[in-house]
Length: 307
Length: 83
Image 1 (cartoon, each protein chain N blue to C red):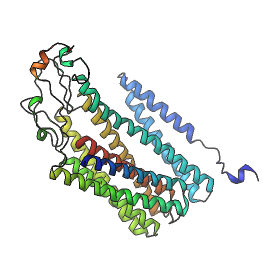
Image 2: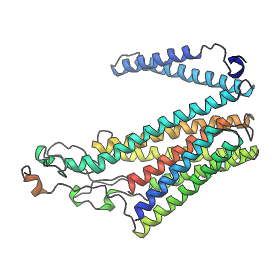
Image 3: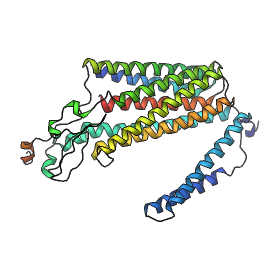
């Protein structure tokens, strides 16, 4: 038995070179844009457009091959392994950011404040304040900002020392609402999954639409939240809290965006009748991804706001 | 105690998600069943955990993250390095 019979060897394809060209133009454009070169931004946009074109073309080809029954069991297994390694890298990615959050909050900021060692940083720099919510390194003489943000820790009028928990965090506001939205999207996706396994196509479409709508609503509220935080002076540069906050929630929001796009593609494929009750790996991969993104948010909600 | 319970449930959720991944990796009808059941478990646990966290917050069993570490006090700021 020859190898070709057990493993599908695809035809030659031009998509990788198109992808390479697109990515190269994108990054050369980006570098030049950073240097203020006039053609930087147009080149970036062109590169991005080529990458999007490549993704549609390449993934569309894979979908066509799959629908035409070219793939065998071994290709199916390699797709499953590929998705699993991707997921592993995603888990490590978010583990690193959660690790950074816990390390900074539980260890390094207390150390800077003199805990467990012999140096008290305000002695070295008298504007230092060991606050977690907005640990800006204010220039000496700068007044601390006052005001309140819906869900963000804000520094009250009397300064950090007078802050009470109520001034700091409102976990009952948007964060709780967003958690509810994402959890509901997990529930609706599970109903869609069930409908797919039972071959009820209209139900799958309805539940998928609900999942996409909930994901989009989540993103809308995140944008509102960022607008608020930013206008109150919480930025990436606002010390370690601002950095870790935007890093975690920003990358999470990016993943939700990707998830919404992937769910939309799956919705399109369901409408086209690409999946059967027994054969729907595309759906399974995206569903797992969405559940993962959902769990990351739940972890964020609990660790950032409660524990 | 409440915090420990919350962390145990989070670990259970991650475990369910992990079993879902194993099911997806295995494929076929059996793998698909395993994946679906695991994901149902993870959704149910997540909803319960969210409700429990809100209840615990409302009852005062856990407090929202204070987020404020010990702010420097004026007398501390004047002191030299501790020996």
